[in-house]
Structure formats: structure tokens, C-alpha cells
Length: 309
Ligand code: AMP
Image (tube, rainbow, N blue to C red; front, side):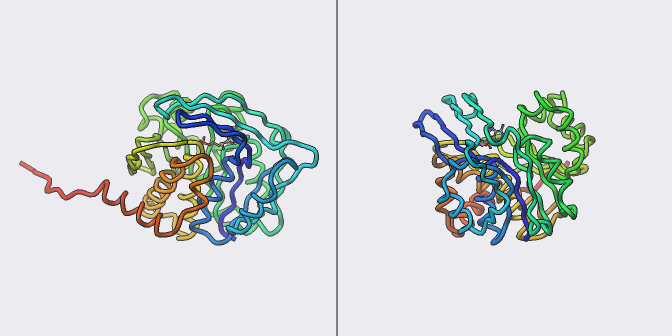
């Protein structure tokens, strides 16, 4: 088994200028593993839900090659619930409610058959849970990637810095990079953050694309200009799922392959925002993905003769 994801499997309620949903299935782990399912045939997930979570969704995940043995189902308890409202520009959102429920005392269990995973994606969760999973794995994966958010910087900075020091790749957005490093310039921030441990850093800039930093190299991937962004929830997680799915499928962690992985991640994220929740991620074809990746290639492709005096 190549890819293991740790992340919330949740209910979300979302409000955007285009409409409003009741409780729908969401969660970082859900978006990551669904996006990765287009690249890897078998993968594993570690999470926790209450017995209010629909069995159909777990069955659907199984049908997409996602082994859910590592999702604990807590009897008589409620699934994590998050609700958010987007502003008119869709770039900013307010969290209206975070009900941790089963996530509050989550003690991740690594099933025996998960131990051989080669790639680990730690979705946004308590940094203590993230580091616990790393410690409980028998073998260190080839590449450990991690997402986090300002919520954990505010309440669990000590645990967070410990976890960050254990991973190879940190994936955060520009605002989070600035908060974590206390530095406005993203180039300076990237140096400070990489000194904390991870050799690789991705800074996501929403509709302005993403930056990949490694040693002295920087790669910039644009985001696809879309006519309409319907619901950005889960775009960051979907980016991570596409990226890690591609890396797991190609088994290549060289910088040139990571650049391709960032493009695949960006392509998957561009689908995610086209409908509410996970809806769009459930209906893609391989042709949809290839043609979107081609659009990315065209977007940033130009001929130039650099003039030199
Ligand atoms: P994103 O839009 O990429 O930030 O991801 C949104 C997803 O993250 C939603 O589906 C939420 O269920 C989930 N989420 C939001 N806050 C948290 C949190 N504190 N811990 C774990 N998952 C969360």
C-alpha cells in the first residue's frame, strides 16, 4: 500500500454567495483521499467519525480503493462538524462553528496492514495526532507531507513545531506562512520555515497559485483562471491529495517530479471549487484530468528569445 492519509472525515455546512448547504460530507481526509483516488488504486486513511456518519460514504470510499479500516466509528458520539461562510470575493471566509466532537479525544490507531505505507499525508488535524501517527508507524515513510492551519498556531504552537520538525514537506497558505515565520516576505518566510525541519515547502496562494521551495530552487504554479468559483471548501486538501496521489503513483520525489505533482494538485483543486463539497471530485474522468493539466501547460507556456546587450 503506497499512500496513507490522516485527516478529518466530517460534516460541513457551507454558505457561499451562490447558495447554502445543510450538513454535507466534508473533512480534510475525505477531500485528500478522494482526490488521490484518481492516481492510486489502493490507499489507506486514518480518522474517526461518530455513528451518525453515513455508511454509504464509507462504502463509496471503499469502492474508490480507499481502505477505511483505520476510520474508527465511535458509538453514540457525533462526527466532527465545521461550518463556514464565504465573502463575496470567495477568497476569505469566516468559520461559523467548529464542533470537534469525536476529534476532541482522538487517539489514532494504525492498523497492522497500514505499516508498509511509503507516502504519508498528514491532513489538517491536531499536531499531536499527526506526530502520534508518525511515531506509531513501524517504518518511516519515504516522504511525509503535512498540512496545518492558523487554528493550531494559536492554540498548540509547541506541538506544532515538534510535528513540523518531523516532516519532509509542509503545505500551508500564504497567511499561515507569514504567521508561522513572523515574516511578511514569503521568500524570507520560506527560509525560516525550512530551518524548522521540512526540506520542502509549498505555499498556496489561493486563486494566485502555489510556490514550491527546495534548497535554492523556487517553482511557481499558477491557478487556473476560472469563470466561476462555486465553493472553495476543501480546495487546499484536494490540492494535497492530487499532489500526494501523483507522487505515490510515480514513486519519484525529485524536484522535477514535485513540480509536476504541484500541477496535478492545482488541476484537482480547480475541479473541487466548481461544485459544493466533494460533489465534483466524485464524477471526474481521467480524460477530464488530462485535459485540465494540458490547460495548465498552455497557461504558463511561452516562447521567448531573451535579449542580451
Ligand atoms: P480547506 O477548505 O482546504 O481549508 O478544508 C476545509 C475542510 O477542513 C472542511 O471539510 C472541514 O471539515 C475541515 N476542517 C476545518 N477545520 C478543521 C479543523 N480544525 N480540524 C480538522 N479539519 C477541519
